[in-house]
Amino acid sequence: MKQFDVRCNLCGQNEFRILEEAEKPFRVLKCRNCGLVFVHPLPNPVGLARHYDEKYYRAWITEQKDQRRRMWEKRLRNLEKVVQPGYLLDIGCGDGSFLSLAKQHGWVIEGTEYSGHAAKFATERIGTHVFQGELTAAGYSGESFDVVTMWHVLEHVADPATYLRAIHRIMKSSGLLVMAVPNVNDLVMQAAFRLWKGKKMKLFSTEDRGIHLYHFSPVTISQYLSKTGFRCLRLVPDYGIVEDSKKFVNWIAVLLYSLTGRKVYNAIEAWAAKN
Image (cartoon, rainbow, N blue to C red; front, side, top):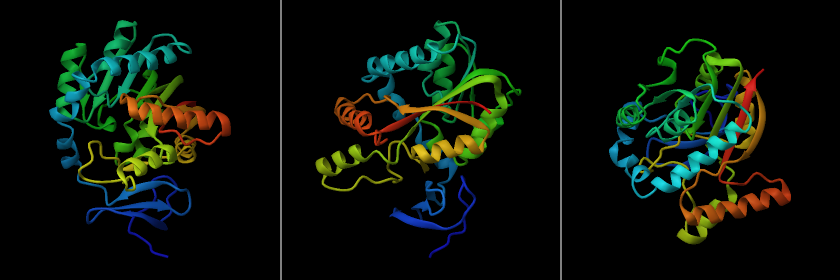
């Protein structure tokens, strides 16, 4: 059994199975104890920051603009079904679209963004300063926010456990965390990719448009929430897909889930409260 000079970010153990040999020196490992899947070693954070430049976000504000607006509107509607507008923090706010919409609905907004380009763009867009950098460096006071959202961000950070503990600290005792992450068990999408491309879908490549450092399952994301002081309220399919072909494949996966209970859809939306 091969051991690596790394501890699992979720359970702290150090016995892993190699899932994928990527470009040297990177490998995708799976913890033999808890099942967490992650990249080792982690890429240089400076290089990752440069990856999310103007080119990365261009499609969001051009050809995908209308589809993404509908996506954000649906997410905000779902949120406002259970909580009234209050203080909201969006971590990894991208181009600021979700924050802009929330502000129009009466939310008092704050945002963080690792990308310098996106932070500047979002600040100008929403008229509220977006903090550029890691959440842990933002300096928010304890119990500041009624709602914290994190849409497809946790898979990009170097230390998910530290991020979730930081969110726990700044969230009010009555607050709500809503986040979405890709599902490593998206078997239907993986099968469709293999059928269409004639090869297995890779979990990691330095050439990926969005580089995922961690790959979560419904089980591991639930364990993360429990470990960091949260109570998981629900896990449901996330519908943050704008490409029609992928939407159709995900619809099949969601249908399979509704019939069998197998969580093989493309991404997970998790709702959590403080314990």
